[in-house]
Image (cartoon, rainbow, N blue to C red; front, side):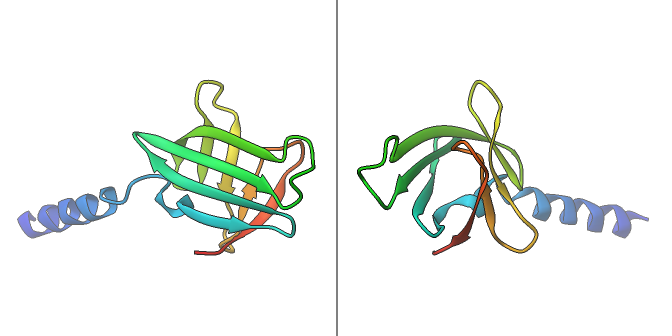
Length: 105
């Protein structure tokens, strides 16, 4: 019984070591936009840049919190911002409609 409890605690510690939202960190691309996610304090800083700099709102920056391993929400409003899909892609809700991105690095 003691070995079972020890094994369960070890598994719990190993699973708990990974910080929520860490899979978002890096650069993501769609057909015409790049999103960069960086760790910033206890949350994340996201920068979104449209490839066409003449577009209105071409550059966007936001601070996000990890709600789970697969969901980042806007600080304050808690609105869904970025989510990871099961296929390894990321869905962005930063702009007017949801868009899908692939990780570059």
